[in-house]
Length: 143
Image (cartoon, rainbow, N blue to C red; front, side, top):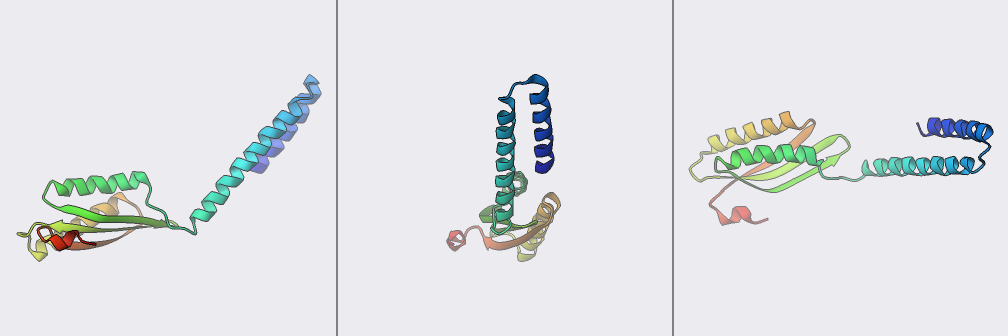
């Protein structure tokens, strides 16, 4: 598209200068075209480099995840060590879920399965790693 706008700008500039005889229009349009090329080039380089580096999941998806966690925090769970990253189109999420002591292993596992399923439904192409811990154990809050 940069080539299209450059060509349109050059043709428009030549036409405008020819019809109006205002010579300053040619360099003004040229400056505008140069700025457009610089902006587009910078954007392309930034997007290309981001493919080589991991970055956090976008805020929109993080808000969805946070909303799901908040729903389950009302049921007595605690979430921490929440980490996300994105590599290309693939998203990754890891977190620790702390359960009340009166939860059985099965009940905890079934609930974390449900939470992961909700997150996968809300956030496309995400891989989740969760770690279950007892809420009342102080070691659960250590890294």
